[in-house]
Length: 399
Image 1 (tube, rainbow, N blue to C red):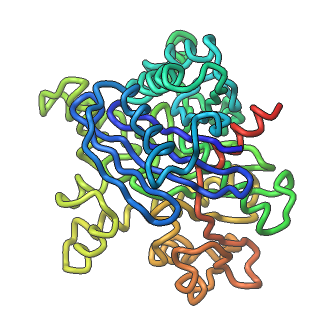
Image 2 (cartoon, rainbow, N blue to C red):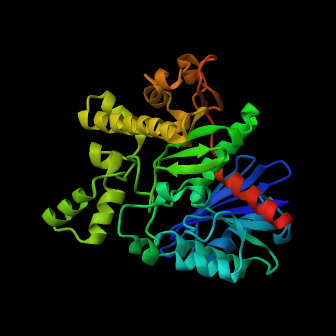
């Protein structure tokens, strides 16, 4: 069975074609500048890269182009569309409707569209991609949607509610949803495979750290709390996002800088975090280089980020009544031995004892980086959200 995994944005379309027999990626790529031109970058398993400008007025033309590259020419990986058994879509916001992945129906599409107010930059684009697939692929090709928020739907009300008038929860569904759920679920499952543990008996803190970052408390295999909230803006400081701030700061800045809601939203989501603190970059690698050259602002941004992660680990250990493992994943979590060291240092009281030589040796790799006698195990587990989407798609279609 071959599954096409889709991650659609308003002007982009990332994809992977995965052979589920071996779980190997046959081809992957990205259609960019949809609606404003068009560019596709397509890579095959043999290392071939194709980069072409194209005309993508809508997502439909982008799908037509990626199908052309998958099925024709010397670098084709399938003979025709009949070889693609199903399509799996990443969906950012599933709201209260979806606690698991589901097959696409008209009702499902309508609910995703109805949640657009909660994810205006994402859900409308997801709907466009689903509709485009219906136009380009055979009518009987099943589609599956996998939600970023679904894994967090097991949170209890004490974790997901805000201290606002209850009527706003009833009227607008204002509550914590959490994001990166597909990643948190994947690394939790993978940790079980690596350790042989029954995850329904364990308490885990998973740290997805990248340009966007979140931490989750996973108790007995289910999420009980997470750092992102109503939107992905909450929680940790990120590449361009502020993370959690006192709400009064928002009101103060809007008043004194004369910012409207859209301008304030832009400031918090696109001009803050590493970029806003350093004044130079949203990339953690450049941030570290800048700090090493003496930038105090960049150093403060680095220290803030690592301090916040440490606090979340401690608070989630308290919330779960203990902790068995900490997992680092995502671009920063997997590739920064310095960050992992700084987060875990002075955590022996909690049972975390990092093996520093192993932490450095396993940088960029999968494995345990805590000492043999550490009460709490620390792991690097590279995430693979696309593979989890493909697995969910296969399982639903097979049923």
